[in-house]
Length: 289
Image (cartoon, rainbow, N blue to C red; front, side, top):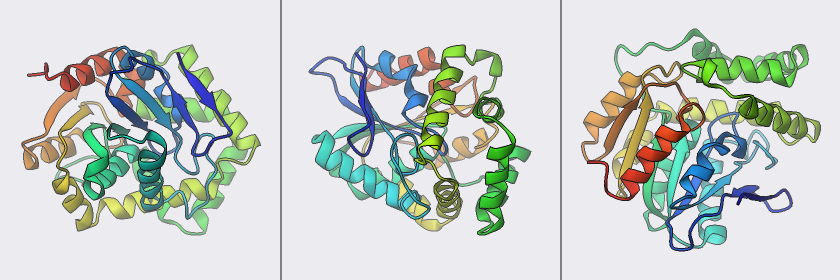
């Protein structure tokens, strides 16, 4: 059973699960929220106890340009694990959430029993090709004054449904896999959060800028190498935002990680929830060899 409340911050959604199942914390990507886990969460709840958290500046957790930065949200996740979850957990992070999961696992190994990376932000590998939409997004994120203005104009020029479709068409490898239920959930949450002022443009830009800058720093590579918990890396062969070649490179540099390619895009938990749940569950149970 899924339970949620908007009165407790950071906002979280519990998906239930067996009392003796491992604790799993689902960490969304840039521009995402707990709604991204609506398909995967119940599937994981068959054998684990998953909870999806809204990071600061996203979903129902308010934030600012400063509190939405990846370093600040890594601290938020650490506090959530320590004070709210109250036990070591498996982190499942997508995109920016993968980066934040890596940062958290490296800094606080006592809180993390495993890390599942779903198309995480990774250091760029030689020869990697980025989608033009990704390049435009990076440029906007790095513009301190013009970037927020561009995003405000985009919000004003298109409704939530049009913007959601535009974003998901880049994130999915095959947009025909997008269900009406998924789209309605994304649009409904976006409309409510924006009406309540919970997801200001400044928060998005602050998060995006910090994500890009942290991703190119040597520190991020050191954090990846410092993870002591088991790691499962899943990456879509059609990911247009983080090249699969970057995942191939990461897997070679970290041979202890389990690595699987998937026939999808940047959001496997949304596009391929059944396959993704099956792979994660098998890995958790030691049956993926």
